[in-house]
Length: 562
Image (cartoon, rainbow, N blue to C red):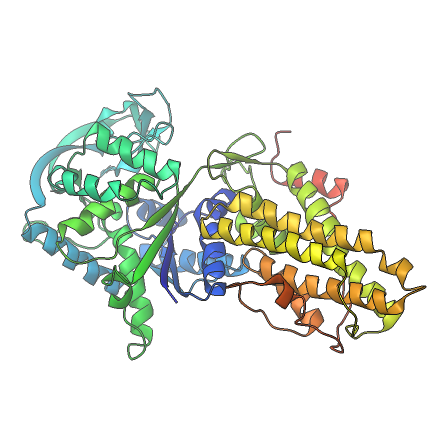
């Protein structure tokens, strides 16, 4: 058994997660965590809300709420949404806790002691109309490198170039839209990335054969351009006050304490049961723990460069990221998801429209791994109708109804395999081996294609063997065929469980069995788990078709441009 630490990007507290957020980091991390548990590993899967910074201050101001109360409300909203999406976090915490404050202070003190913190007087953008220094992400303008006119002051999401706010052209406040900005001097603390650059480059080189192109290419781009000192403090009130004399009126920059939040959240988890759990077993035990992270490509620089450099600079033995699964974006009907423009379906609404496994299946089958992916209602309905209802759901209903009507509500007994079953075992074993290999490699689209192909093999088997015809002349042979098919339902449930846990459980419940693991999965053995006499229930259809009328309704409701 191995220890696997699974983390995903921490969602901003004031953001409402849409389907792009779900498939960009949260759902793939859950699928992987579920799969690795089924492979017999010890998994710790943590996440939490990212709560500091101007984002929270502005959100609370607009809502007319105290910042803490605003964060409490939205944390509960996030937690409920992820529960509805069946995300199997071992712990869902938050970055604003005392545990994270303790970790942030410790890591900062180590960096300062080791000479990686510099004091500087800098020029920062002040909004006269908003009466505040503007955080980088609340300054919008034109990127001086690629010309994108909606670049933020910290990074251009179009070319991923890291920016300083003063570099933006035609800059304006994202809060009020005011261009009445001026640059004022203010004293801040910086993390000296250039001093750690050589070590970081050597560390990153060890990831070359393993990281996906999106993650590795972005990290190398940063190194090629040369690392710069990064400001880690801000003139704000909401955040951890800086633990250094002369800086008590400032707070740590959200991008400094948020990644540390992974450690802080793990300590939250450990503090619930201190006699049983230790955060150090996961974060200061790199030889025994494999740390896998899932992020959208806009977050990759901070988790491949800034946070690893931060931990290196402490000169302590921290668990670093071993595999960073960078994801591209999901677009909605040819454009971006936008709550303000009422375009796109967001996660909390999605689960009200259809069962969550419909979404989990489509999103994982279309995960934007190497390039952006596009959501459309036609594609979504097509997958539900053809794959879920037409292939998997139809097989389950067909087999159980036929067995019940012809032989009764017990798994048929007896009989020997023929060459047809031997060929099925051989074919399935190869496909299942590939499916497991793809899941281990986090190549989710390939894994999903293989999973669908496995379901198809079941349909092909029943079509070739024709038990409805055979039973008229050879009941014993029909029993063998239907017993194989019922065992295939159980196999399909086990293989589908990381992606569609509710549907998988429904299949297992009909057969009166529990979920089993995937390690050393042997098809011949698995086809004999139900060997005859066990009771089963036919149950209701697993899935329902999405009608054209429903699609038209949804397009109108969620702002389709098509």
